[in-house]
Image (cartoon, rainbow, N blue to C red; front, top):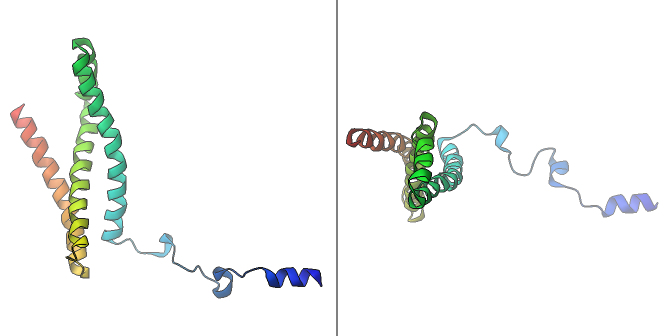
Length: 142
């Protein structure tokens, strides 16, 4: 009798009542461009922290003297360092364009499905094109 009373007092979870989760899990969704861009926006935001640390290291090395600067510059001008800087440039541009996309949404624009998808694709394409422009310009000037 006591066991029956305890079982009746326990709340029944929504998953047990309907046999499925209350809200859908990511594994059942077909990835949409807006979903992917949201995830990439978060990843680029986190990556910018690490890239900013590299730039701070480079600036501190420049202020510390020629030996420290030569060491930092040697690391950042290696093929691996340039690859990291290229990724940082792309992350910075992509995150900025994603922020502009979110600002457009905050002001109530681009809310139709076609506009949301178009803004997401424009963020991706724009970040790739602008990164290439920045690096081609920097290479030409150098």
